[in-house]
Amino acid sequence: MTELQPIRSPVQSLPPDDFFWLIKRIGADDALAVLQKASTEQWQYLLDLEIWAKDVLDAQKTMAWIDRLRRADAARLAAWAFEEQSALVSLALLRKTEIIFKEEEDEGDVPPGYFTLDGSFYIKTWDSSEVQLVEDFLRVLAGTDYSSCRALLLQLASVSPAETEEELYRMRSGRLAEQGFAPFEEALEVYAPLDVNALQTEAKPLLPGALVEAEKKNLVPSASLSGIKNFELLNDAMGMITDPLEADRVRLEFAALCNKLIAADAFSCIDDYENLLRVGRQAAGYLHIVTEMLCGGKPREAAQLLRDHSLATIFRVGFGFALKLQWRARRWLGQNWSAQIGKGPDFWGTPWSDALAGLLFPRPLYFERSRPDREYRHFESVEELRETEALLDQAEALDRMLARLEASASATNNCEKFYPLLFNRWARHLLDLEPSFAPLSRAQAIEFFSILRRGETSVPYTMERYRGVFLNEFLQGAAGLDAKTTLSLRAALNEIWQVFCREYENIRSADLDARWSPYLLIEASARQKNRKMKSAILG
Image 1 (cartoon, rainbow, N blue to C red):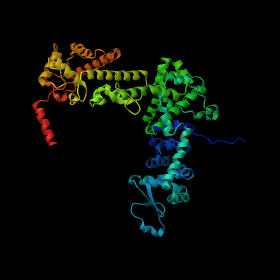
Image 2: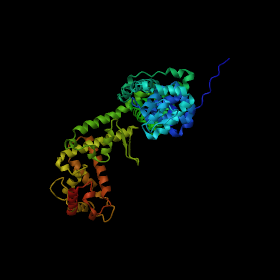
Image 3: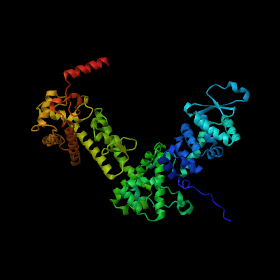
Image 4: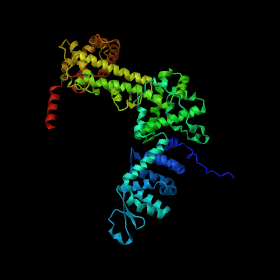
């Protein structure tokens, strides 16, 4: 007679990765129905990811998740706590409570602030907001099996927190390693860059043995693949992998890649669903960069690349392109002219300072200035790499040009950005004044703008006729630079002219104010100087 197998719920059939993504998508406190139908193995996977901060157990998160599991399925939680999780429960209680054991005749000696379930154990939580949470949990344990609950509380005095935490962490690391979460130091290898030539020597990846076993096919996760759908070339390439085993291999490798990125960030990036999505998008983004660069936008060739190489190797090649930009930016910022006069990346203003700041993150990021929220994120295309490289080229060209103008450190004391070094010097040239970076008087500033706006009678003032004059002024000063640097300098000067015009196009000459003039230094009026002096005295 064939033995009947227990019926698994659809939730229990989910691979651990997909179960975790599902909980994150729903939200922890809204997922009680899903937690109720999940297996204890899925509970364990969830806790392994949620309640640790590197190698330290977060007792507050532990108790919060225990409370969610209690609300989902109290009876099963109690049985699980006694049978498999007594060490975890003991450590959490030691970290969050003080427990006094008293015989009945000693009840009068119990200090205030403690509660009891049976007149023997008196419990006080260190955080008053967790009193109900701890009491509800202990009532579930006592109501399910009082003798086991009593034994658990009695043995707390013999528990060594340090040893227990170390053992729990060792067991957790072993479980996570089976799911593709390498130890932190080992996981960091995912960020070790590889040259593109590594793809020429790597052997074709083998199919994982689990894929051959039909009963384990359901363990292939798919939720993390949502990150690939944002990249047309990568998505099309995946669709062209028609061999089921090859397709499953890629899916497994992508999930493992995401897990390795999570482990390399010490699990700090999985606190909510949006951050989890960013991990998938980060993994897909660097894969997309390599397929773009090597396959020229051809999905069939991209599919072959995915078949022939491990995704981890392709990712490291893609990340290597961004890392080369970071190395270059750091070298330049350590030895350029602006560093010699004590200026940092912010000195270069938008968009150059934004691009530089992104490259200076521990792991280089792209500044997406076209979006309203103007956020930093991981690189996702060859175009973004080239755009950032072009901005770095322009910043280097501006630095070389400004070094030739011989602006001293003292001349830049009043300059938060480099713009006045250009416009104050140029204004003095147009006004036939001695070359200098010094502030203009208000009268000189008004005369300067009257020259730029000659022939224009109302706002907005375009000042377009002086664009070429401005460019030629500083391109002449860059004579002798190589062609690439000159092109980069021209592009930077064009950008500077455009933002200068936007800044002043609606400001009438009579309304010029030294306090609100970022591109042109103007001397403060006597009244403004007096206000500044009084403020300094009172301050």
